[in-house]
Length: 372
Ligand SMILES: Cc1cc2nc3c(=O)[nH]c(=O)nc-3n(C[C@H](O)[C@H](O)[C@H](O)COP(=O)(O)OP(=O)(O)OC[C@H]3O[C@@H](n4cnc5c(N)ncnc54)[C@H](O)[C@@H]3O)c2cc1C
Image (cartoon, rainbow, N blue to C red):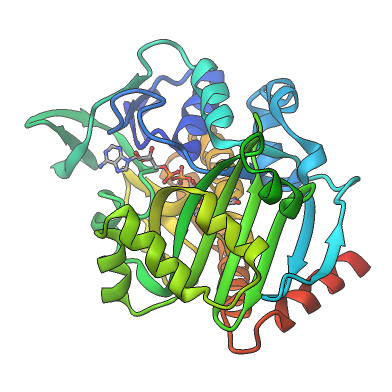
């Protein structure tokens, strides 16, 4: 690697922005290409809990732990579990856990405010990465191109960088989630249902989730198993059709659980995808991946953003070590080793939640965790 490499980061999600911040702390400049036209163009999604050894470690290294703690909600780490009749089977306050929640919007703002103006090039959808010889690559945006020594794919599930390194593509996980938004002031029954953190109601291959977010918001999810064409059709359906399909899927469930679907504003339909567990590639000078681009997994392990932040921290160290591409190759190996058990956990979590055994697996998992 050149002593002052020109670095492009594709994607201004948590992984890409954290990498830009940490490189800046090492006096290494970079450009982040982000397709969003501005920071708040689209809802960033629900709340995330940052884990001590991964997400929180990266925030500390970035000098952003105080900003994180100012926004974090340690009080929202509780778990509740219901059966489809609405019987509360498990209720844990979560007080004393070290996985504080933070809204995605707040996390993105903290990271963006830590960067020098101009670091992120908004409205820059990368359409191609072209090998330019000498291990360098041209990044194409809107028909124009710029050449870089290192291109980092931090561009999530459908990465444009990944195909240059690997033939793997995300596979459909057999489940789609309907994402819903609620406000505690208008939806007191859902507020009471969710409790101090997150609730799940689990039945035969069906799951309802309510997750407390900051500023009096609740994020809801209704998920069930469906074939991929049905998930695609649902993603293209009208709001009324989506709500009607969800209500039919949860027919017979307790009315106070169904309130999540009846009362929620429909935000998105999210078919879940994952890369093959243990996804890896032959290291190639000048190109690498972090976060979901490298190891997309279902959200049922709660590790995705934590891994993306930890990857960023470790890649920044590798680049700043100035010891050549071997340091990046070593980083890639370690990243795969760390992501593999998390991806196994995500697959187990999804299959445990969406099964004919209904609530049994999740109840056992919660009891095991609280006994540990
Ligand atoms: C419903 C749901 C719930 C989840 N809940 C949790 C949770 O509770 N805890 C947790 O840890 N994880 C959770 N995750 C996973 C988490 O969201 C991801 O793992 C995390 O966002 C990955 O960060 P990233 O930076 O790698 O990618 P992303 O967050 O996907 O960011 C990628 C960025 O790249 C940009 N981009 C994409 N393509 C291009 C392009 N061609 N040109 C320019 N820019 C581009 C995108 O606009 C985006 O800003 C959840 C995921 C889902 C779907």
